[in-house]
Length: 151
Image (cartoon, rainbow, N blue to C red; front, side, top):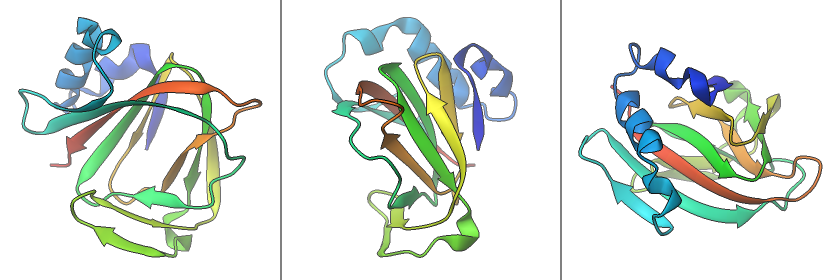
C-alpha cells in the first residue's frame, strides 16, 4: 500500500510505469467533464471507474482484496475514511470473482487513512481495504479508481 500526497504521484512512476497514464489523465482535466462510468485507456494495463456516493458507514465490516489489479483511489471531491486490514486476519465470505477481480470478507483493521482530494491511496493485490467510510461527518464523494494490471 502507498498513501501519499497527490503531488508526489510522479515519484512512483519509475517503480510502476503505468502510473504515467494515471498522471496524464489527471493532468488532462478530462475527469471534470466525463460522465460517471467505466473507461478504458490507450494503455492496456490501465482502466478506470468514475463514480459518486455518500459515505454512510462508521467502520469497514467487509474488506475487498484484488488478485490481479492495483487500485489507485483518488477523491475528486468530498472526504472519506479508509480502513486497511491485516491480510492474515481476512476471512473470505464472498469467493473470488474473476470478472471483478475481488473477494470480500471481514478482517482486523490495521491502518486508518483520511482521504481527500489532495491525497491518493494505492492498494496492491492482496491488500485488504475498506473505503467509503464516514470521516467525522457524512460526505458526498466523487472518486476515480484506476485499475492497474499488476506486472
